[in-house]
Length: 252
Length: 105
Image (cartoon, rainbow over the protein chains, first blue to last red):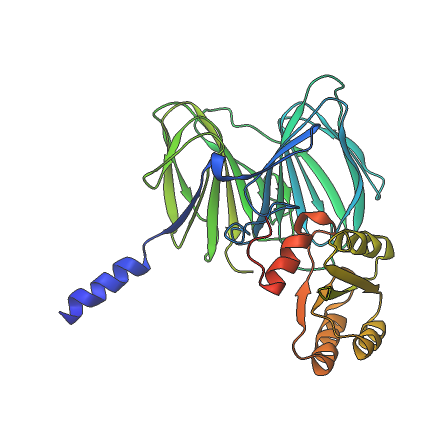
């Protein structure tokens, strides 16, 4: 009896914990020129059940009309990652960086002690669509920094490509947090295994396009799914699919 | 007339601090004041009872620790929270959570 109870506890303790955020359940903001879907509480959207997934605090799915954008505004103490999906985004900041990012590139800013910047759609006629992702830093008040990198897409399909890590010498861009981001592009009826990088981390999967199943949970385009208290999981593509895996500390 | 929620903001970057104050004061039920040093924060807390102290960017770890110790000694019930992001993105949620407000959406 005691042995059976112990086994039951063991089974429960090693079971992954999960959270599902369907696309339709996200918060929304329509400012005319800006349409944004917020997975987590942001600006005027507040839902105490949707604050963060570990160190992942913001996941905004933004579309900015042609020629429009965000005027000068400040940031501090946050790792801010932009991932363009369509169009081109122009960036200008108080450190003197002027840059354009397009699909196939990733941008990161460590806001640290403070930074001002603008972000505009470079194209006058077509919208720019991008993800803006904020990760809590592992240290406050770092020196502000800007970085932008081209993503090295794999030659073979059905592989993950790392686009962010905490290590300056590792693949992709780096940030001040023990976080790893991977992009996946799978063909229908293929699957890929993912191993969590660090004990205590969890993974948040955001489906960019198509349908996938993770840990038995079916996901559609723009659904988000967090999984933690596990070491690995499998993503199965039910259609051709693209997704982003954000592997972040659950406590920090 | 209901009493406004008093919020004290500390941060060394004056421009960002002014932005945060402007954003907080758009809520008619909040009254936010800003300071740039621990000494100024202590002086403000001797004059006014604040419900929230928001710690913005720019203080060293040692100064943040000193700030928390000194302010808690003056106002034990104050909610002291670090601010992240530098603008409107997380600001309102930080205050709602500190005040235990659950339905501002």
